[in-house]
Image (cartoon, rainbow, N blue to C red):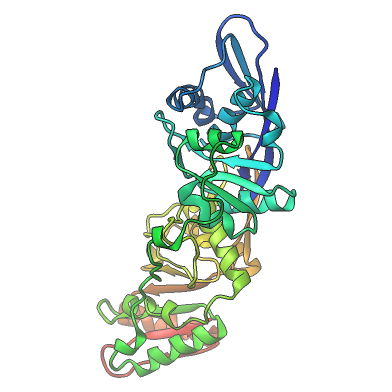
Length: 384
């Protein structure tokens, strides 16, 4: 007996269709998952077995074979659990196999059958919508995120709810959760530039940088307010458009940074990595690969506080994102292109005065715009 369910695997920001084929050939009991699945996916065996029994369903007798097609695509993570469980129940005829048509499923199973959200639900829902699938079974926490793609979510708390829904015995709330169940959205708090007293020239530099999307370097002695001013830049940026909101939200969804209380990133993101951050942390990487800080700051601000303390290879890796607005990452597990149109703001301390004067004579003619605040605290700033 054979049954199929549809789910999605993440490759960068793109969701690739994966068909979960469950086959019950008979023979000695055993459970095999094939199709280039990683360890987290292989561990789905115990989660799915316990989840099906917790939903008061029968575990299929004999040998169980699950194929994740296409076999050449690397599958990572626990988001395949729900689709595997539904395919097995359909193969054992505990669910009508034809009911899975037109549906996609994404979610992790707990041992007690609860369905947990996974990262990348928005990208998967967008791919399902393009493929013509009309229903998307997911964790209840992911329902609002899925609804952004224009596909109808079927929010589930437990595998038993999915079984009842597909049997036609019960109908969970189809669509996003009701407003009464939702936590009010709260936009991230950014310090207000209006709170800064004095620093007229530095404030003017921030305003020009915000309007023109210029990169900005703030240099001055310690304690003069460089970081304080830089953290106030996101609060005066131009609001994100609808298209940018979806693009930024998709990136944060793939990175696993969205919460069900706030499934949309409505304001320009602000990222401030530590100066010990590696090259992979800044530009992205990993077996996946996953987006780095430059992509998480897409359409927002990337603050590099204490710029000279960052590793030179990490700073050199910023050349392509700054010039092209995207970053291309090639790994053994695949290649991905992430958007990285960020606004760079860097802070640094000045050199000792004799060396500082020599540096100014050497580099100041190359600066497009520079000024110095005469009275302390003062800051030398540059627009790029």
